[in-house]
Length: 324
Image (tube, rainbow, N blue to C red; front, side, top):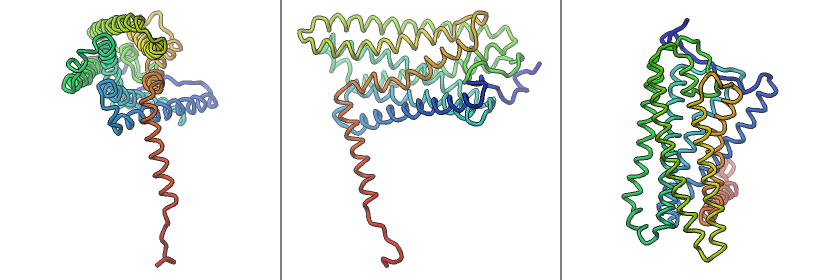
């Protein structure tokens, strides 16, 4: 039986058995990845360039877009490359890096979603105190705390997971390196230490989820007291999708990480992992910003500016030898 020191690469779960389906999955993942890059990239550029969006809400939205870009760029490119080249291999160092960065981005993102719910709660339920509670220093501190918590969480889990001896082969039953699948390869009782860390992290995430739900309940109660029906409709149409995506992420993530190996199946694990690792980064741009008129105007300006520069570059006269 090989141990962790003799493993130089891992074999990931293939997305399909036939070559035609592999290519189909490649084009599907490529479309999702490009859509996520485009949506989150446009939001990041619009928020950074438009001074009207230099407010706490859009500052956190910028951070969310960057985390989404990092999260989906950690998993999908390798899966697309394996599907295109009909391979399953990922190096030992590449697997450790993938696990580290995915844990980092997903942990920081959930912390940031908790902060964003608090920002909306203060803005709607305590508007007179918003300027004091959400000043620039407080926003920078909370954003740094979200990124720092993600870094701490990823360092803890990566070091704990890859310090275990691996003697159950090198086949990872997932399309990316995921902590529960790596733990299945361990032959040491010390894997219970990482299980304890996972349970502790799950409790923290569930606490954040409860905080988010309570914040939105308070927001909904305040919205229901609004005299304007249009205002209520706008608030509900924005907050409910937010809550739906957060619920999808926490439910599928806890299922993936806390599900007993005896009742899991590769197909179910694959579907769940796609729901919490691929879907949120792809749909967050639509839910969190494209329903917002200010962001849409800023994105439109960015696109118009880029198109005008491209047109000018095309129409710019070129000089050749015959012009000299």
